[in-house]
Length: 378
Image: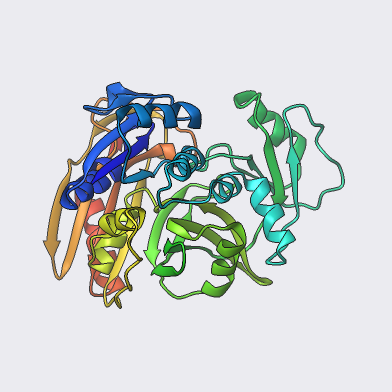
């Protein structure tokens, strides 16, 4: 089987998840990327242009599957998959999910939910008369970059973001009060299987840095599934974030790929299944398998830089087992690196993920690891 995988930067999800999974399935893998120096053996291609992508694939030889885990390449990859008659996502759904304004508009049109939202183009004036508090964010942003809680001065917040993103559109919407949750799903075009979900702990406002995710498989699944059906996001992996407000659940964003920041590995650990293989099998034309019951607890804790500076001490990559808990530490930086605090997910120094029989033992293992193996930024 011939699998083409489109990518931009190298990620742990691809190098440690999907590529080993593809090899386990017996696939011959070709990585197509505009950054071939970052992917050994890759083929150079303007993967942001579906015409170039289709042309390159036709030149190399027709595939059995075409896949991407990149936030930025879902629509282009879906168009190419459709061209070759392969199982894949609807490019319209990919585009709608990626564009936060289109997501809001589609959910309102479908009668799923209404969240007050305004789109600001690069030259649009900041509107008056909006009810605070608000959130302003890039229309197609990722990793919490330039997402701000606004208590009173919307114009000032917009100016701050536009200085860094002068040509991009923004979305201004009402602040959603309540616990932040996720729902993880896997669809095959006919059915959508719920894999589970997490409760998200954020850092202090006005920023939205995700500091911790804890296994929380229960929740208002039907509302989120209805939203996915309205968008058309029913094929492959999908990571949906929502707030459980006093008025009911409200979608924050739909990420039409598997959950990241090592929570994909955590999800696989919790379910006890070859999750990355499951996702690729769907793209190879198989049905999504039934999800087993989970009798474990797990957490992913992001180690966030609290200041700018140089890393002077840090633990390495390791895996530990104690008191029924398996714990993994994955460093994302190294000693000697200079850290410039951005108040985004880019401030992560490392990630701890832990799985055990209950929360008490998982929490104890994480606390002990952090106390005995600290990251030091001087």
